[in-house]
Image (cartoon, rainbow, N blue to C red; front, top):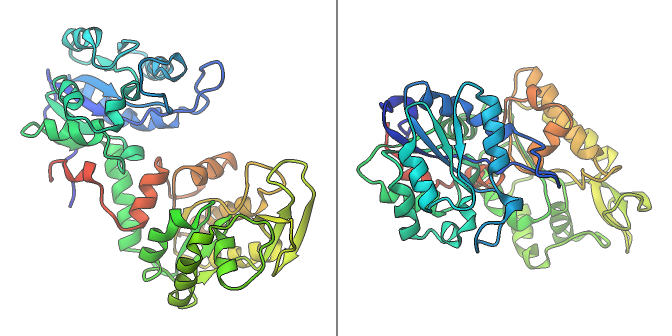
Length: 399
């Protein structure tokens, strides 16, 4: 069901507690190297401040220990970048603690049209622990709850789950980015134009089992690359050399190949190396791979076959690279898939790129503007491909 969105509630003079995903990459100097997640939250942020709301933003960044402030994971750079993107708006930031006295005073001092970004939620273990007391303290900051963090929608952490529960009876709405992500992914899967092709890659079959089970009855083809392909190939009886294999998933992979009705397409040739490192010796194999060689990318014949299948598609979902694309020369397969999806989109196909490595690849190749949608959430988009809903979204008000 559609959720009520932020533009459907009166925010004037009211405090809006908004969960955003400002988990942006930082270099060693603490500088943001990609501000996409901040920029994509701007429409929802502007909707609040331009209508006279008092906005309190909360987010996590990185993986701090949860035992107190860690300067390397401070959200200060995000606050500074948000201020640069909104030069006419006062953006306040209180360091060290998201729920302490300083944070509470800053919330109380907010004026209409101003923004406060709280410090990293994960400086408290209680955030990941979905702690009710921690959530009640945060919930007291807001008159309205808004979730615009699709990237963490699949995680039942306090700011996503316990906070909206604690704010029952108050408006609990979706931001524009969350709504767009949910709509795009759901509509793409439910109302796909055929041929419908899924491209799945990455390291582990176990990460994609649910997606394959959900998609195999919906799509015309599932193209599988990345290290996960070698678990399927070994399950089919092929020698895969030293390639990464999940031996405890061979039975699952064999069952999927039998039940897939020929829809699951595996690599026929492989670009291999001794190690997944730059400068490693390389060799091409067709079919079986010799001992001591690792499959690190799909080979040229597979690239041609995958490109042809993608080229015929009217709907494409992609989640996971075809190889170790960060390490030349093993980026060729992932680049070819990205280019094929962009070309198909240019001919009218609808294409949805999962977050994480797939998003990094499509952006790294400069093709993000040539596909229909690039998701901000890897794990969240994968959960939608599995056909599962989110508890954090279910808590929001119905439209």
